[in-house]
Amino acid sequence: MESLLQVKRLTVDLALDRRGRFPVVSDASFDVRPGEIAGLFGESGCGKTTLALALLGLLPPDRYFVRGSIRLRGRELAGLGESQLEQVRGAEVSLILQEPVLALNPVMRVRDQVAEVIRAHRRWDAARCRREAESALRLAGLPDSARLRGAYPHQLSGGERQRVAIAQALACRPALVVADEPFTALDAGLQLELSSLFREWTEKLGISFLLISHSPGVLARVADHVLVMYGGRIVEQGGARQVLEDPLHPYTAGLLRSFAPGPRNGFSSIPGNAPDLASRPRGCPCEPRCEDRTELCVAEMPLEFQPEERRLVRCYKHAC
Ligand SMILES: Nc1ncnc2c1ncn2[C@@H]1O[C@H](COP(=O)(O)OP(=O)(O)O)[C@@H](O)[C@H]1O
Ligand code: SF4
Ligand SMILES: [Mg+2]
Image (cartoon, rainbow, N blue to C red; front, top):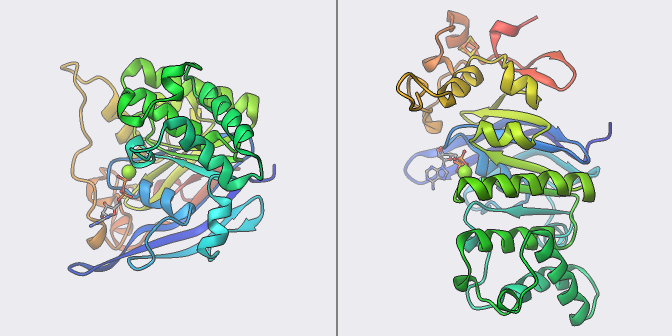
């Protein structure tokens, strides 16, 4: 099947005055297919947000250096200028952040903010943009009330604000939405409701998602395909059930075990710490925390092994 988004060998280096230049995302390759929810799963600090922002060309170029290919419907986005990217962002691919406040203007009524996104990409008059904005707000589950139409962000609850940010992202019916931990700040009931809405938009509107989450429960509920990231690298990918129920990579297995209720009804953690990206091991990034490591793992980075189509694992245990 044709890919909607095709990412090849994406690498993002970060230059910091004190710590020099180091890769935050290394050699990431994956694709998202039309009408699919792809989940990106990994611990905090592994590079998920950096990867998301790189896809949309949103990393400040004075500190971040992006290499590799990002093709959306066959069109190369890497290397496009800011004005070309502005035409693509919001219209063909959009972003939902964990904290909606970052996406919203505090001094503009929320309906106008959604209409503004539409006005930036469509040659429609103000009344039509407003109607489309109301339709996007309804799609995001906000009732069509006078209170909401006239509200400013601070007059809404956290959940309502996230729905407004989602309405902005959906307003121009993009082909792809990148959602960076969109449910993390919300209570469990709302997480469940919004994740079902993601599924509905995929099925009814054909919108694809790259859904970033550190919750295997959320991904098991909605994702079709799952990518697992560790230390800036994608270490495993495959169908959601394959990865979440029958992981191949020792790190994925450990991470999933850490979410299973522990002996004291709490959650356990994987031994060791997430890697400091500025001083990563020479070999496998997981090696300091992996019980299966051998000398080869310490000496050299494993390649990606592909046991079947769209199933990839970067671990010597699965070398053919
Ligand atoms: N301002 C910064 N200073 C130092 N390190 C940073 C900074 N921004 C990002 N990083 C590095 O980038 C890594 C990945 O960050 P991020 O993409 O936000 O991860 P995630 O979204 O998975 O939590 C961090 O672990 C850190 O090493
Ligand atoms: S390559 Fe080696 S260290 Fe890395 S996950 Fe596999 S067994 Fe563990
Ligand atoms: Mg993040």
